Amino acid sequence: MRIAAILLGSALPFLPMLPASAFTAYVSNEGSNTVTVFDTDTFEVTATIPVGQRPRGIQLTKDGKHLLVAVGDDDTIEIVDTATHEIVGTLPSGPDPELFTLSPDGNLVYIANEDDNMVTIVDLAERAPVGEVQVGVEPEGMGISPDGKILVNTSETTNMAHFIDTETHEIVANVLVDSRPRIAEFKQDGSEVWVSAEIGGTVSVIDPATKEIKKKITFEIPGLRAESIQPVGVRITKDGTKAYVALGPANRIAVIDANTHEVEDYLLVGQRVWQLSFTPDEKYLLGTNGVSNDVSVVDVESGKVVNTVQVGELPWGVTVSEN
Image (tube, rainbow, N blue to C red; front, side, top):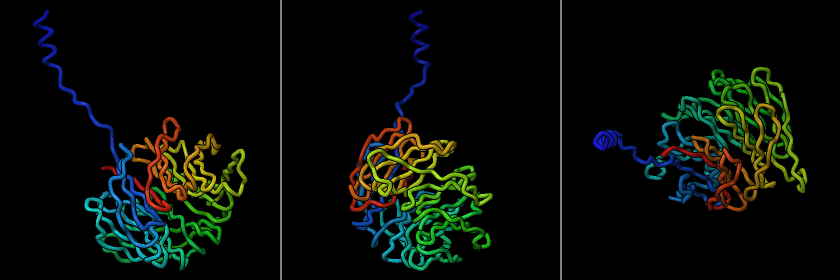
């Protein structure tokens, strides 16, 4: 029996302890003209990258090798090598680029240029413009459907969500929403696009097929005036069951049932929470707090704020890549 036990024990495979998945977060700091880099496993800042003037929109290329940063006061998109943290090029844009999005295949960049009421379309490989679309006044939000066929741009002053055919570059519908729309975010199944209205205090849930608003989500927080509740950043889980909305100077992130469109909770975070991003495994949700100069870390499963990371001055955008 003893020999058998020894043989059985020696036949068992060695199972090493595997580390938890770690990702890298990038935060654009509008006030300090930097990008803060931190590890989402340790929540330690690992680098600070100097960039151009007034960085806001920020996103990684599909292969994760480059970080794109909209530097509005320099009228361009800077390209940062994620391995070396060096700026290795720029993309042409119109004046004052704010937000942008990539086509699903990662080949095209759609840029909202706030000062000339234009969406510029750039070929990423060629680093050259391939089209432009005239939109409403002060374009900002940029959301693209999962199949890449429809681009939604929000215009802050016109108070519209513009639906753009990505093949023809034509506007196919203009949907009037509430005052100062900021973000357009599609569900992964393409069934809805959510548009936040900062001054209007609502999120419009739009059916992309009919271009009709099917629901307006409103927010009420005891002790806060309605005008201090300003929806900005929006993120929806991959399975389409939960949505999160950054409420600006309300210092809260709303947790919403994305099927019923009912608000379930408000999470207290830092001051003037602005943009949001999930880690790729959706374990954490990160929110940039523009006045307290930090990032709140929300554990998605527990619905609790579990950490805070100090970053640069006036953090604005956030994106996350796998290491």
